[in-house]
Image (cartoon, rainbow, N blue to C red; front, side, top):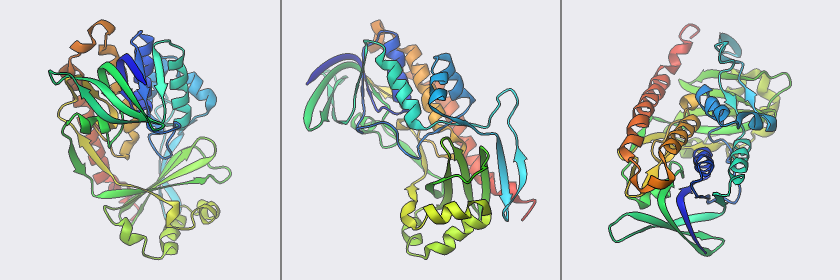
Length: 360
């Protein structure tokens, strides 16, 4: 199969899907490639802040997503010995402390919005295997595999929106600097008990952060920081004492935890790091989102940063001047903001225990 489009976007996460929609809306022909057969990955990028919310509202998409289901966080609580001791409420002008949006809901609306335009195409279950170059070394195409069949795509611009392990970044030989943060993260999801309020709840266990994020559709997402690289050794130890700490921190969860977290297999491990790339693009390739600046889960900046990247890059791309895209302009405007957010993440991580000094 052969295709010819103005722009090929690799990765149908929130950033890639939004960018593809915005380009199609400008009559820039775009082909969106996704290696998975269906959209929506568990435990990834599901909290909007006011900036991400504003972008979706400006595009007339937020209400459609809300109709599918989302949940506004009404408060942030710090807990000690099974009781809340400090509560933070939202700014009345914002009205929430973040919004949980199931990624499947967000992506389905973004893809539906794109499909309303003739310039938009999406291809699922498609894996990029090579970036093609012309004689001058300018990237001008993609070789991919869909359902075992080779796909060749001729394009003026390749967008890498394919996440922290970006194939596009690797194939384009764009350098990345990794920063470790000293911890990894265990994710789990459990049904919320009755009368559980939409909230973010924090506790400190053995000096490590334990977070509960209420989710739409009646769930709680657990995020438990552990020592970097410690999970292989940790899972050799008895499971019960570990999970008992969760119940002691949040006694209301006892029933649902015992029913839904019964072994180490009920956790998903995320190796935590942040990354930056000095170059956000070159020779017909541009990067957005985690592909160019991986964020840690702290502060839930990742999803919103990817949406802002997409929104900004779309504003720079003109159908008649795609090959003249100013990569430096694209990078400089967003790079400073991302660097600041990554420093805020480090500060929050280092200062987390100080939230509990009044009760320890």
